[in-house]
Image 1: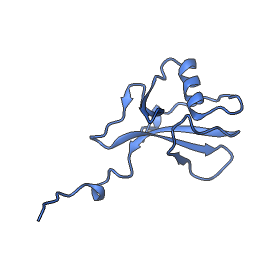
Image 2: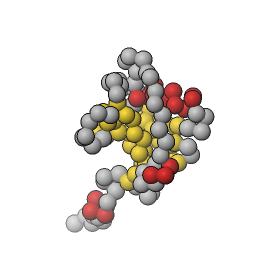
Image 3: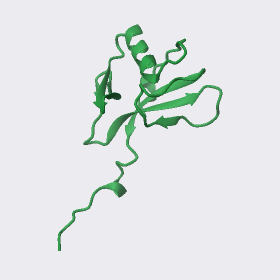
Length: 117
């Protein structure tokens, strides 16, 4: 989870054709009851908001992000901006749920007070 590498867990699944990221996440949650996933629903679609009780923390700028990586590729994992129900898995893909600071949460992106003239 995030930068806490020692908290990482791996499951190797054989999913049916046309399975989505959501299907894989829910399959792991059914296999291992310690993997409780909670979602925020936006426009009727679920987005990962908590895993194992570790929730998105807007005050600290920490959020759950979903990444995809092809196992045989040397490329970095690619962030998934769509809902997990919208992305169909391809063969030999790795799903990474990563709890980390959002790219917008840095000090350079903090809002400055605005005064009206």
